Length: 176
Image 1 (cartoon, rainbow, N blue to C red):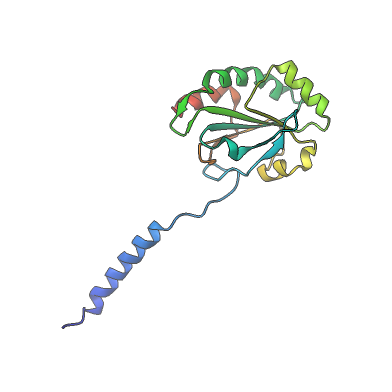
Image 2 (spheres, one colour):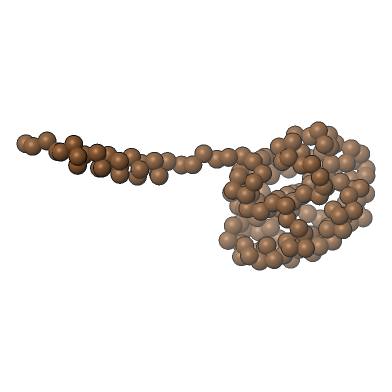
């Protein structure tokens, strides 16, 4: 039996190695850029119930960072509530249903509760982090100003960040 020619064997090996390497799963990058896995969030609401971001897997999720003193965040709540109520049961190409995971950073929980009541918001997860700017959530999301918004798909991958709330409905419609 005759041995294959080395000139013929080398291209075959190159093609095989390329095929194998293209089948290797990509490493998941946890971060805050589009295409990154959103960092996990685990915070409590006013009733001391813990809510995790991962518990919303399967839904399109808007993550919000805000505090009661930020006028822009407070103004955005009216539009966010309207959009939330309109789309929470919708089917999207990147998730079944729409949820809002709202992270408040006020040091005083009473200030946060009052703002939630005044703004009339009923989002999926209204959570509070009394550690404010030194919280793990703020660090892992690189928050340096408020408000900040991230849109996450059904697998927890960030598909949009630095969202302007007046554009939210258009962005959601683009996901249908």
